[in-house]
View 1 (cartoon, chains in turn purple, green):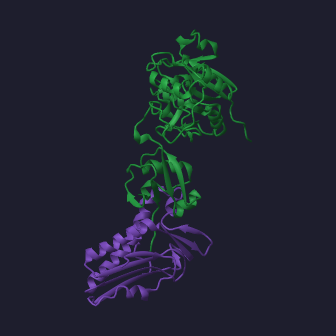
View 2 (tube, chains in turn yellow, brown):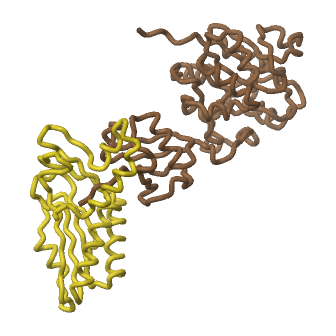
View 3 (spheres, one colour):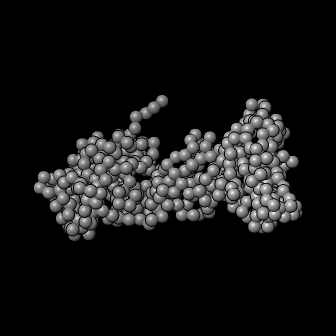
Length: 165
Length: 306
């Protein structure tokens, strides 16, 4: 079973879900991250994901394998989009099936949080006002913002779960 | 406004003690000529003026006295003193600095060096085929290197090679890989004489190993200072700021931390090292990991999956 992969085409949650079906499981939890029309006060028109696939797949597989072991769930998988996405598109899908719901919720939350922080994926947002920018990179690098580096990153970490919520 | 690059003068280093040869290297005959005379002629064929660098006590030497000379002002420091004295005498000139004991050096190699010289850099040098480091004694030292040379001596340092390693030296691959093999011992001299034969020409190479006993690797430096070829892949913001997805560089950087500092001088990378992670050969690694020849390095800007 593929624990983690990238896809350059639209994701099909029903197809992903079927891969996690297991007669030993009494619960299934999934998380879908969608492209939202605003971020940090700006209206977003579309976005692009760029991935470092060779390392990203290895790191993603480590995260999902860790989650299965750590929470004792039966099956888990994560798929992340690359390329150009429109508002409402499915950007990331996580699914977990297990004997009981508690560990499935916990493992699912763990996977999406870790993926957002550890897998080399970058997001370029294109705004309605014509600007664009690499999320988490460019605000920090602007001249005169050096003193804010630390704050920015704390902020980014605290917001880890906001996509799709 | 553009200005033409500074004129190139030749400087033949003949102030050495020839301790290992036990006889005056400058006076040894190769190609039927004394080495100093041959080196002077080679430099003269490509330079506006040529001088012989000597120690003050060699000014009256019959061989050296036949040529225009520039005497060292810092006795006992070796070649760096000769380079400094030449730069002090003609500060506006770029200096083609040549050791006098390069029996395989040809005009073609010197022309290649001058054609590929980068006057915007402090120096242009060949990469040694024996150890991958810059060759300081067949190199062009630009006027802009004068302060660095003086500071090097003032700091009590001597090695011109380490100075080039620590400067933004423009490095070239040698068109003829054996052109800079030098001769320091009687055994090397015999081998070189035999190779060159009566005709004064080298026999053609028969394979990758020319079988030059004792001719290569007469100098060496610590391995961590070696120049290596590194491939750097760029993603996202770095790809845009570098204007490319990847590049291959010759670098002396020992660690990813050093390499990033080097790249920040080449590209407008404003992200601080502390904001990044680094991967070598598709695995995350520490900033102090030792880089090896052929490694692929990726600097990872803050990620934003999900």
